[in-house]
Image (cartoon, rainbow, N blue to C red; front, side, top):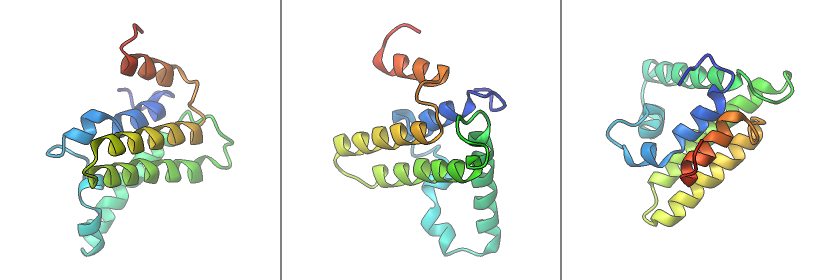
Length: 133
């Protein structure tokens, strides 16, 4: 994935909320694994968490198909939706419900970013459906 690409945003959203990321708890992003611990930690841990979050927001802002004035706010909400969606999905026992939640978060996040019809979103949908790219 080219994080400098204008297509990085939808790729990040799909990768973050993917089944692979959901199942790979051992190698998970610390923003999913540690929010509660970081809340109870000192400023050093919070600054590290914030730095990672800001980096994710920065990647999401690039190539976002929304009004430039709203871009940062929407990128922040999109990043929070991705992280929170994965945290809640992983806390569920019902795998079908967890998958539905991840899918709903993904669709809303792609919509927020204006990526519903982007090349990356279309290619990702084809891959998820098993169709040729």
